[in-house]
Length: 181
Image (tube, rainbow, N blue to C red):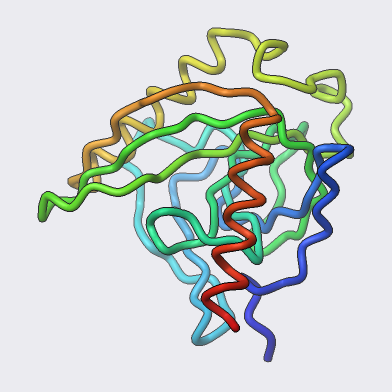
């Protein structure tokens, strides 16, 4: 059984497109995590009443981030996907952040932002600059609140557009290749 986190990504730097695998669908309280040992998705936590994932949340396969996991991505799409769904996405930017664990260990844990290439509602968005600022602010606050509930501190460093986000993905793919040689 193949490890989904090692799925060969169709990375197209010119178009700003790649693949994403959804772990947690939009509007859900259940937080699912991909388990490479079983090749299944398992329940990793539950958000409190009144708190939901604002958009589909998952990872970019064949990448590694500063936390040792595949790079995280929040995907704007018209309707929720399902757990384990493979999507073609257009990267629109990144929320760069540092995350501090309960034990005091701090690591980079950026959140890529993308739009499904099959979205009608968000099809015109090519960059964070084109995203409603209120939505971006709410996404940032979601990540801060979500991490606080898990006993972690999420410190926002920067917002950047698709060029910087694609550089982060490229580095993540290189880190993945280096680890899996």
